[in-house]
Image (cartoon, rainbow, N blue to C red; front, side, top):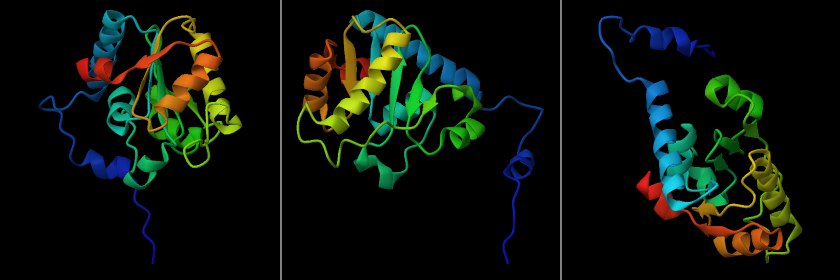
Length: 177
């Protein structure tokens, strides 16, 4: 027999009105402020992060352990905007659970890790173009972009270079944040 649980009601039992506990909205806001400040100090227009810890830091999205090696999820965070999550299930479902990301969750254009063979690989270039569209939306295409946490960093750097986008190592910026 299957039991349907309404987790909103279950979690409500543990909520209290007599003390302030974790303010998740403030936590998310302060993380983004620190990341923006670090990008500003390092002269970056955006960070693109595949690192699961930094995806969590920038969006609160948790990349499950089986999906980490695939690098199917990443975040594009323009310094002058809000983070965009790419991957992570259907956009509708992610936005239902994480309404602070509404309008900024995207299905991945492709999954280059299992297939990419070089910077001209069409699968890899689909992802580069998807990222480029988000960067263009915020007007940061002509600024250095930090990439963090992908095992394909050399291929991505070369592919972005072919599109006229300057890529730098983003891990120090995220570590500072």
